Image (cartoon, rainbow, N blue to C red; front, side, top):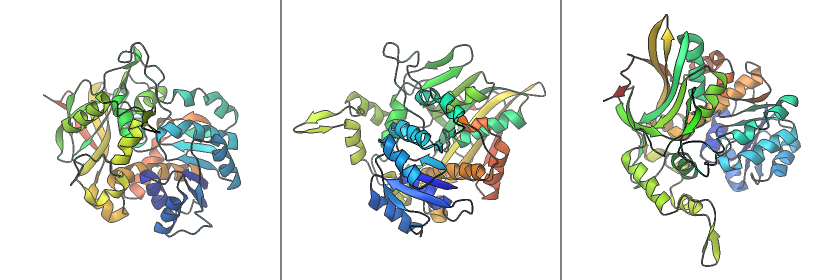
Length: 410
């Protein structure tokens, strides 16, 4: 497989590291707005320019994406940059006549009149509008193929296929005790994406009302996580699983909640009240500055914080339904320890968790175990070969059986 990797930041570096040397990978172009950063990653993984050429690219330029994909005769464009660049990369891949993969979908836009009741433009809507064209051209866009969305969707598909006769709800729950020591405020992944996900109206799927929205951080609940972590307060956050899962799985409810912590939530609320989450530029003396870009510039780069991260990150799918006529609930999850991830892979845990999933998906595509055309989410594919690869590479994943009605602590 010949791949154009766009973006070699926190997650892009993880993808380059984890895919290096795999027999199915013929070429991986390391493309970034900063060519020096691409060259640094090339050096870090010990690659040469023949198999991992470094290139500069403007990810906002569809034609530049098309041209670079054509120049290197790639099979797949892999998008590893902020979701604000999804559409030009997505459209550039289609123009080049190649497949596409991302880990985050096109951005939402709140309903102008009732943002906390109904969605305006949902995550991924702009991509799904083009589904017919991708289908007609016989090209595949595999969307939402990171950790979550991504592995969380694969878990849901596995549960539907093997663990239940009838599934009712898929609730993604993220938690753990991961923290960055020595910093007053240091998100473990992109602050730009953090603000986007957490401050947008979160979306909920219910079969009787389709998609509706809530206020940010709404409906807190104390979900009991495995691995000794225990109950943690989780709140609604906008996420792609809620728009992906109902498209392929017969389900009544889908939600996404994250254990963010009170202090983190208060900081995000303060940023919002001050207007520091805005993406439209404001005039500061003689310079136009987007407030969110300023916050990002002042926040530590998550890629550099691996050695200071401690604790565990847990991502999983809490699935409810019926088996043999009886209620059943399970939590399928992946957990990793920050220090162990650094020792084994030289990567901070969120980068590793996110990065290994598109690498596994590329392997399945390269070997023909997964195939298709159009715009497809992870749950549209057979989960069995994916979970088999997790086992093959020794990637921890597990299932917690839950006594029905006890997942949420009082």
